[in-house]
Length: 337
Ligand SMILES: *Cc1c(COP(=O)(O)O)cnc(C)c1O
Image (cartoon, rainbow, N blue to C red; front, top):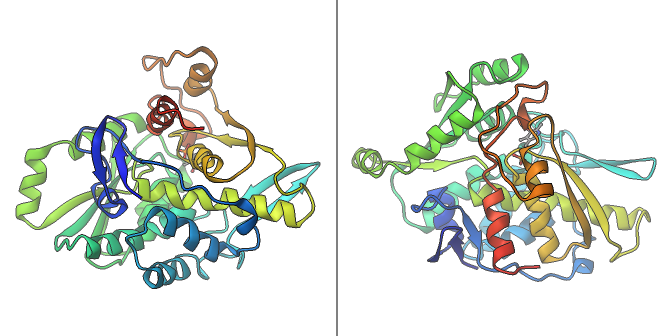
């Protein structure tokens, strides 16, 4: 399995290289060159950890199975309040996934519990000696989940930027009270897009990066622009489908619709990846709040970046620039299913 950039198809890298880089030098995002084709019937009996091991193994074949197994076992351990890792509940024929049983209660825990392991393993594979500095923009949940995931991980530090006025009080307190001497949190004047653009800007500043390298630091990202963050999210779509089959709610092979509330398009994109690999999905339905730039785009084909950002009671959906949409456009243009 190799990855290319959404902006330059001549690029071809291993997953471990992409995880370390976070974003491609041309400003594009890393995408798998193909989707592994899997028979869903072989997956429905796996528990969460075994399924995570299988999916990650498909996308990161350069990681030894035993190493990956240790990582999935340690990532999805008793930090999660449910031994099953996720739960689901059928209410009047609709299945609700409960992705909030992780240490920070955000669904981001599903990926950010394992990303630190993926990074350290990648470092070893690529023989990188520098200390990794994670830069992350957040409107709340990512920040806390990333801080929690990376706190006290050796040879790694994390800096989180959040819009001072754009997160909830609980999220702010969660972040600024973070423990661990390798963590730093900064409130910025501006909104989430400003924070995200600032981080992308730093990533593309080659001068700054070479100065850092002299001091033995390299940058990486814990946002869903990092492919290492996206792949672990495929797991819960497949897992929950298997559960629905086992609970006799659907027949094996029966198509389902999946509704995902969306901001950076990472969560729903992981569903799209699952669909391209094996999952019988009829429609992926993208839900928005007042900042419905994606709904508008999907309905009209026009993406209006110049709209005004509205601050709502759901800050995790307040966005104008939805990064992972670029990945979807890449895959569609390349004629994937
Ligand atoms: C992160 C987050 C979102 C947005 O998810 P994307 O993957 O960026 O689309 C929505 N709601 C909550 C509560 C979140 O934490």
